[in-house]
Picture (cartoon, rainbow, N blue to C red):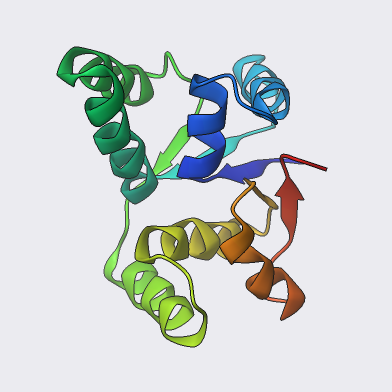
Length: 138
C-alpha cells in the first residue's frame, strides 16, 4: 500500500523526531522500485522548503527541493490542478485545518491511500470519514 506524505511527516524525518522511522520505512519502500509510492503535493514540498530555509538556510532548502524533483528523494510529486485546488479548498472550508494540509488530505483522498502524519489538526477529517490517517506517533 502506498501513502501520502505531508510536511509534518517529512519534517519529522528530516529532524529525526518521533515517527521519523515510519517515514524512513515508507521512503525506503518507495525507493525499492516496487509499486509502493510516497505521494507528495508540490504545495507540501513548498511548505517543507520554507521551513528548511528558516531552520537551515537556503542551501539546504534548495538541495532538498532539487532532490525531490530529481528523484533522489523517492517521492511522487503531484502538481495541484484546478480540480485539486478546488477540492482542497472544499476541505479547508469544511474543517479547521491549514490550507497546505488540505492539499495533503485532498491528495490522499484522490489516490485512496493513507496520509502519513502526526498533525493533530487532521484528526477531524479521519473522524468524519474523509480519509485514513497513518499516525507517526502510534
